[in-house]
Image (cartoon, chains in turn brown, red):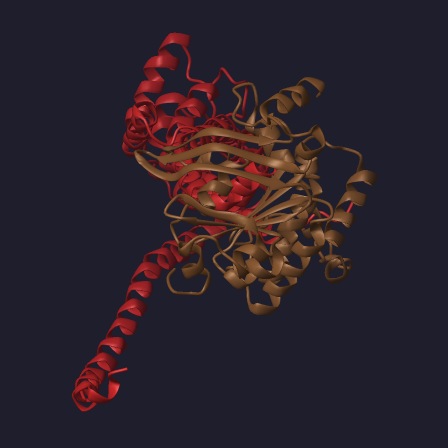
Length: 272
Length: 300
């Protein structure tokens, strides 16, 4: 790790090493193409450790595409191709020597629609990542499952029915189960792709509460089309439009005093 | 809003809807009756076959019938035990060959090589193989195995039947895996799992019921095949002697018994048919039980 740290120090000129540590994820000139269409254009952005960063913007602005680049999930889409640098914890995740599988263990993801594994129980859903990655110590698996479910604010609701199928839960509970499943892998970064878009208001507010609590343990990047949600849960907000990063700053600044006119118009609901 | 200045079309729309409504009720009734008639039309042959087989075959069935080889021709003594044994061995062996190959090919086509010249070629020839007359496969088995080894054999029969079964399993596996939502694979990837693990432990279990059903249908299909067996296992009235020797099978036995001019042989033939149907029925019901008994692993 010492080598990586020194590389990082060199890369960020004029900043003290202490300042570097606050950034968990750094994007440098990130471009994403779908075939010949450029969906994300020259994004430079630093994400602070142990914070919630929201990507907002109208449909098709590239926010989900950008999110999927952060754990190389975009590679699963045929024809998608990313350029530039994404540095997580000082490691360039696009480096040829890096296996995407390793990155995804450290950068977890929660999807738009809850997708628990249908053939597994609640317990097994959370344990799946651990077991299939080769962990065999049952006591530790049990402890991790319990802690993950507690951190996902689901433990109290399911502690007596851990053997029931994951699909037997309500939509909101299923989404929290998926969050627990991601947390079980002990990720350093958690990517959330519109995690409440298929949930009712009560389910959504539970997830929002959860996001605010989770940032003590993990860096969260959340994509949302709901501006109020971004305002409620995030510390930092990035506004994107047609693949460009228009403005990035603290959520208070973006919502109260946007610098760009486009941001102001989007925030005030004039388009989007 | 300009609602107030809109022209009022409600009366015209209502009239049109009402006019259509009567007609729709009649069509609805007709379609309902039509579907019921079709269901009956499909069930009548099935039911009449079952009734006929049970009516004619039940009297032949006895302990001796199930456990003894056939007595002298026309005597009506003995049973069809070698044929039951042979069917179980040959079909079991064929399934043991065709299932792993078929399922793995299906996984390859669905998960690892969706598009491209090679998978498309495999798909094309797989479909051709599905439509190949079974007698042709039997002849190939005869030429390739029976003539080269110099003997009718269990192996030749099992290989021929496995070639009939394989393309069905490939197709069913591929189609069932395709229906498994992509979001499950995505979830697996997001947990840092390798593609092999995702396929084996997440996608395949989700498709398990469909694939098992396909395998059972394919087994039922080959259990009733007669033509390729004539060319490969020959048929004998003796018990299994080894994988390189000839053996009997129920469809073969039925065919031979039916061509004999004795009343007792015909009764045996009906009995054999009933046993074959019961065996396939048991297989299907066993599968149903297996699928319904969805057990979720208890917390360790």
